[in-house]
Amino acid sequence: MLLSPLQHLAAALDFHLRCRLALSEAVVVAAPPRELDGGVPAGIGNKLIVFLADISIEPQRKALPSALRQPQGGSAEFLMVCAASFVAANYADGIKLLTVAMDFLEQNPVFTQDAPPGVATPVLPVAETQPLHQGKPPQLDPGIARVSVEPAALSLSESQALWSLHGGSYLPSMVYRVRVTAAEPALTP
Image 1 (cartoon, rainbow, N blue to C red):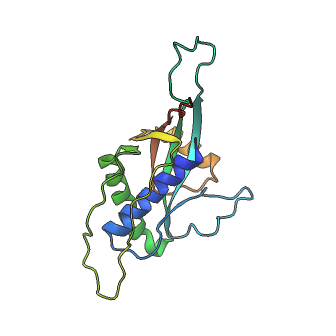
Image 2: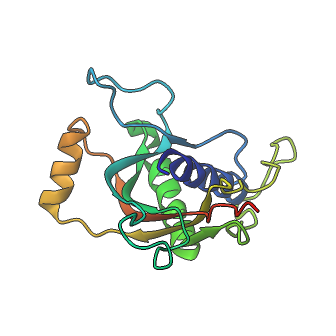
């Protein structure tokens, strides 16, 4: 209920950025900004990282009579941070990727089984030798019915607290409130 939607959002962002900017390698990873020992995780340099910042799970209400229960298997809500983890020499590239990612999530706030997000055509000229990212957009996990994303405005003190909890070093970032609804369980005869 948490990992699958987070990985899906990372994959959807990566697919969109690679198509839109004609990039040949992955630029988005689901990873924390710091290891438990304070070190920087391998593989996050010069990438956008997405990670959980806060979790709230709303279980199905079992105390209600079955006729009154929601048919869905529950829902979860979490804060997701999308941050540009770029070295100083590539700072501008990180800001550009973060901006395109923010535009994508603004234009595609809902992900469902039936409606994969739109993917833009490349906006940069592509050299004939540079391979374009090919393939299909990622599919939502069958156990998830819907994932919605909306910007979450944090105050300066909330932002400072968030980054303090995650290692102390601020990265250019945007925080999103993500709501996940589980798919209805299959009815068996």
